[in-house]
Amino acid sequence: MRTLLVTGAAGFIGANFVSYWTKNYPQDRVVVLDALTYAGNKSNLAPLLGNPNFEFVHGNICDYPLVADLLRDRQVTIVVHFAAESHVDRSITGPDAFIETNVVGTHSLLKAAKQVWLEELKTDQHLFHHVSTDEVYGTLGPNDPAFTETTPYAPNSPYAASKAASDHLVRAYHHTFGLRVTTSNCSNNYGPLHFPEKLIPLCLLNILQGKPLPIYGDGKQIRDWLFVDDHSRGIDLIINRGRVGECYNIGGNNEWANIDTVGLLCGIMDECFIRDGTLARRFPQSPCASGHPAESLIAYVKDRAGHDTRYAIDAGKITRELGYQPIESFDTGMRKTVQWYLDNETWWQSILDGSYRS
Image (cartoon, rainbow, N blue to C red; front, side, top):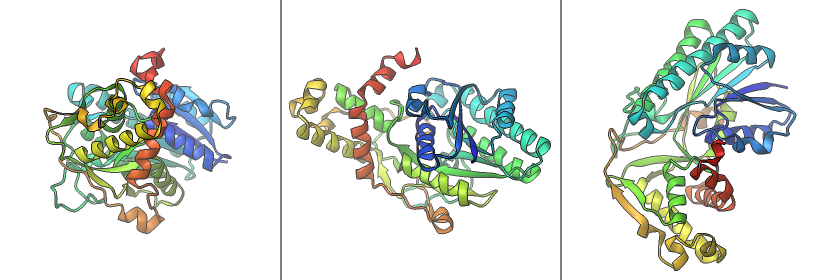
């Protein structure tokens, strides 16, 4: 039996990962450490709360004594580090929180791991897996080759810069102290439990409520979309088979312009209302309820500062070395996502009205 300490697992990607891991490795013990900041929602973990191999700890990764105690007392052998401030717009208006969590918090975890694993236990039976983003690489032109693990870092937002700094700290603790680490840089995730400030869930819920679908600039910014369960599969492969000290890009092989992503979502929502007559009664403010297309809500707004033009992941390394392949197409993954939100209105309503914080 292994014991994993998973940071930030009350958030979107972390909660999906923990669900994936407990399903596929039921013999492992999973300890979640989460500060429950605005994007952390303990209800994301509700299906696991009765599992004897699952434990939730409310705490901050910047709390070095707490992290060290957890590593010791729970006999943790694997850290999977998701905890991060991640919304680019918020990093522009308030970058301090991003430096504190993403840089100082990551360093706190690394210091604790070094202390417990290397200095106290003197064990090589450990792994620190750091989850990062493709945004550390900067932006691409329309015809540029996709990001690889050797692409020079060129972060363009405070969020991306804070993640780049954390990546470098993880690398340094491996090369300087011998900490056994791996890093993954993923493309844009989507799927169940996605916090409603991000593009896909924001537009999905706005369609249901009859609100505008805000599109930055001309909407031609390109993103490589990755279904969250495919991301979990990639991390699984890295933890179990990846080379220590290496970085692996995890992508969806799925580049879409933002305006086309919203168009796909609108088409799926139109179909859902046609197929299910109860939706018009549940969501009468949606244009779909009266037979109008969801895309009628699209509204172009001023582009945000420093908006990257294109992200694209070359996942060749993890494919060649570990056999990774995304399972979901954008159509199948988007349909699963839409259905989850339609089936879980109580979850997202609690976020919109703020009751999930009480």
